[in-house]
Length: 84
Image (cartoon, rainbow, N blue to C red; front, side, top):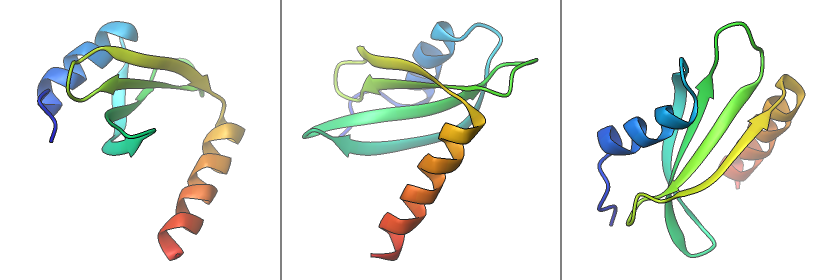
C-alpha cells in the first residue's frame, strides 16, 4: 500500500517540472515496486514529462520526456493490455 498520498506525490512530481500541469496520474506496480506515475504537460510544448516516484519512500525514480508519437504508442500498448 502507498505510504505517500497522491497529493504529496503530485507536489514532488510538479517540483521536477516547473510550470507543469498534471494530465494523468496512476498508481501502478513496476518491477515489484509501487509507483506513482504522472504525465505532466508544460505550456508551449507538445511533449509530456513523465515523472515516476516510489509510492512508499517518495523518492523520484525517473523523469522522462515523451514526444506525441511516444505518447500515442504508449496509449496503444496500454489499450492492448486492458483488452487481455
